[in-house]
Image 1 (cartoon, rainbow, N blue to C red):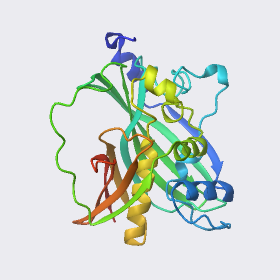
Image 2 (image 1 turned 45 degrees about the vertical axis):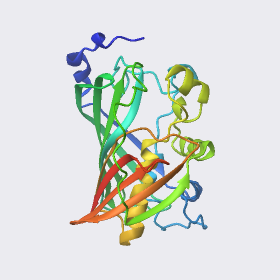
Image 3 (image 1 turned 90 degrees about the vertical axis):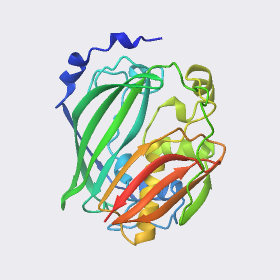
Length: 284
């Protein structure tokens, strides 16, 4: 096990300000695959049609040779992202601002910059947060601005004993339910070229990381919340802020939920017990 006392924040903060750029095309095939994965009508996308609002999470993903991958399926660290010496990496949350929807046929360019690196202590030990700012543009101008918060932590304490019964689940004004099966998780991993083994390798996620099953992607939950908000309001939110509150595992029913609030919607995904797993706020 990697010890948390090897963390050198001053060294890691040398990565703050580093930037990377990637360019990709919003294709009709990608649009069909993402629509299917987000439980939407697939249709036959044509040039100029609006793609799913989080299609940018599928574009320009880093590609590394197989021998440059770590034991968790992610690329080895120390390139664009800092070499945080903690084995677990999760997408903790973030904020997305939608300026101009991406459309089929768009050439999209993403400029990514590491904006902050910080250490915190949590119930599972020391945590390292890395914040990355992204700006996605097309020939029409800026399409999306966002911040992603990535958290790293140790292997210990993956399933602490519950201290008390969970609170009553919130009531939802709007809700729809789906099943989080392994095929859904595989499809999203493929669309985002995400090799993280916690999403498809049951032996790894249960025997090495100590979870009870495959873990539902954080961005997939966020994508479903954004699309649900857009369906309820008839247009995408100007801003969507979100954070994961607990893992969502495959093999069970899950729900996408929303309640009206001043200026927008409060949204959340929930597990089969109706307990929130990700919370978000959408404003217009």
